[in-house]
Length: 208
Image 1 (cartoon, rainbow, N blue to C red):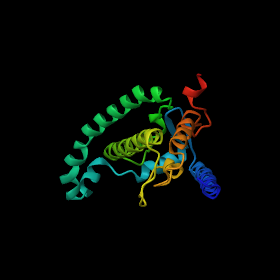
Image 2: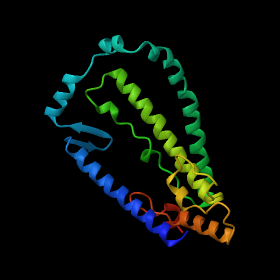
Image 3: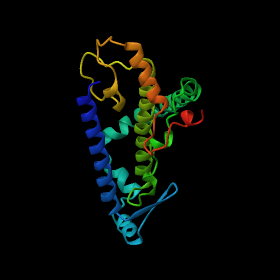
């Protein structure tokens, strides 16, 4: 990858960090604190939340009919999602230590905290938690497969790919066969020396 591409990727990463910082500052104005896995709001704000809460009975009366019809299909997906979660977790548990790739942490992707919102009734909390699990699971699995792809086949496609994972931009250009195996090995070494989002070095690498 040429220096121009490296420079652009560095600029993108810097902008993403800046955006994350601004969003965190904005969220800080909502006056809540995180204590372990529990989120607590200021007393006055919690009272405001309770005032806008819609009771379960009233909520049922306002649900669109088509939502009732599709609910069994949506929640029926819980079984394949749980099975997929189990399979992808076992896969990385067994294979990643062999490849010397740091395991992906589920807690970084699957976040369950909507149950602490007082303005949601019990049904809404269940909906939110289910969506959080499903979306987080797919992101968790995407990172596992992205690290696997970087190890085995870090080559871009001939056409633009929508929704490509963040690692894709550092992959080898389609049709670039020059020093292929050397470049692939360099990307594998990058996985072994990787630092995660919290600045912690690859635990497998640091245990050498």
